[in-house]
Image (tube, rainbow, N blue to C red; front, side):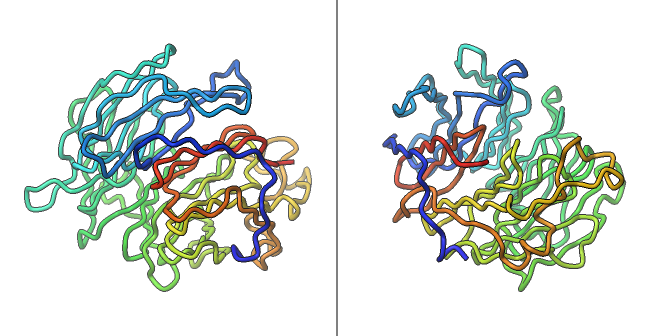
Length: 357
């Protein structure tokens, strides 16, 4: 499907930052900002000295400006905000760090959980994080799932997976349940309240490595998975026999998948093929009959389009947001109509006026 994608008419700027950008994350908007934010953080990788940095996006068409940066002891494989004022980083040295991100946009290192991912005594990379309230879930190349609490010096729990297969992604689907994905294409659902936490294992088609997971912002049972083969799968955790939808998305591994937080009929992906794609399934939306509204369905919600037969058949508009890069697009994030992305071409892309309605 990606081959027939149209070109976006949004405004795109590309800022050279002299570092390979591994991850980008918007600072969560305050409740008074109604979803608007103009500050994001980045993490670099594959450099002599890696950094986490804070950037400001002007309201006009200008490039982002650097506000502050701190050295990071290893590759920054992931960043996830724990609160609006604090975020955690996944380190290539097997550690997780917690940073304070104050309102004056200065960063301060607050805590470190050293070497929580190791194999035979040697540290291995922490590959991904997920956060939920006062919990941080960390996965790594040791195949372990580690639960952290920002107020505690030691991990709350270390869950060892059978076989030690590298885990690449993790996402919360409920307050005490996470889904992890590994290099063999296994998606595993964990109940963190249980002594034996593994509840179910899902096999991705052809057992291809799953590189990234994204949870739907309002339908917690929906998870999008980006595969090493460039395929994107939509899973319904209430029926795990097989993915509901499987889309041929990229010509190589997908590095990140993200639902728009306020308009989840829109989904975004990026990959090692240098593409940044916008998937618009809103044409398949149908009004929710009042009598069928569930407890989690907000007033005026639509039936989840990602479970519709139209989307499963491929009735989805695909747009290339930026000209295809010759190097990987590693990460993306979107708030409101503005998307940011980081690349191995040592650039940050800012895409304004992303068409959502």
